[in-house]
Length: 79
Image (cartoon, one colour):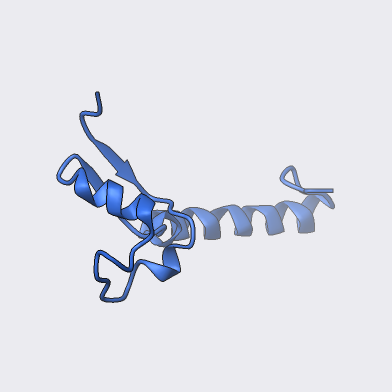
């Protein structure tokens, strides 16, 4: 039994979010999830757009660049 869920990632979400949708136009998985409201909340995939996430990304980037300049390598290198 599902008590509640928050869903942040939906396939092809650009087709669903940020526009007016009639329930008959939404993908069936979205229609089924919406039918479960208020137990499910649907949001666009936006967690990387929060102030904290942006600040964390900038901090990590600056730290990586400083380490690369000062030590010649970066712990977070992908290669």
